[in-house]
Length: 334
Ligand code: ADE
Ligand code: ZN
Image 1 (cartoon, rainbow, N blue to C red):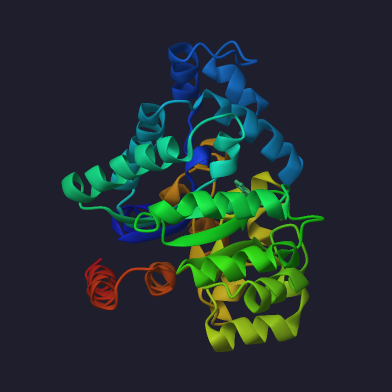
Image 2: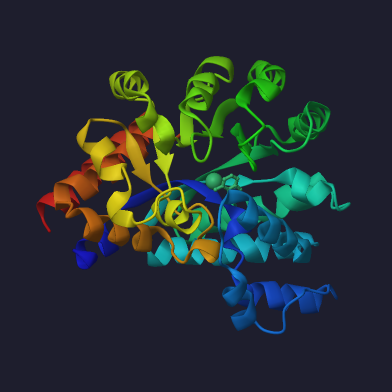
């Protein structure tokens, strides 16, 4: 099965670029930019990655991002992730970035966007990996800061397809950002949001209804509300599920207890993604393999995750059809 996963064409829809910062690169950038980090070696960093919930991860994650200063740093970070995409046969990726994590430290918005998009463009030309960029608002910060960030994004509309919402879900429900999202939609951005990761099923309803999201990031808590599960299946609302992340952050105790296979078999448009692979111990293929092994998924079911991700992506219609054909062709011949 691992061999089938390895070459299966895949699309990633839930990846925080700051969460792909491997400890080795963190050390290199800390040295290059003369930034102190509270670790003596990459091994020590890895040892510190023991999380009890989302917040315990976010605290260490925002600290790690401090080593990113120059445009070249954002390029190097993004390029390293794209090399992993090539290894895992990820043919299209839609990546998140958190501008406020950087602008709050005095890094210019354009430094971040230019570094990331330079790597994405290079991968498009040289590796044939296509991509889109999604800007997330940090939900623990206030509405005014989100509005200010939206304003900064307007000159970069051609490079940013959508806005999203991430960080601490508890205590920061979708309604806090309803007006910001309304303005973003007016400006022509698509919308997505993290909801139902640690927070309630109600947050999923509210993300769909108040924020008009094209898809829900995580969404696994939908199982608490059978009517919601039915609606998600009926309307084919995509869920960008991140299996290894959910185990590391104790959303589920074990992969066997994860509800992703149940949701797939109930006909929901669920997808597999890596979230913050440098922190959670695995990129796309690791996530696919972990789910396949725990839930005895067939090749057809694994291929369905890829088909769902293609359908849920912001890829143009004709390119979607071509990719779907390539996934079925691969599945029939392997
Ligand atoms: N930022 C990075 N990873 C996240 C996650 N899993 N949930 C919320 N915010 C995040
Ligand atoms: Zn996420």
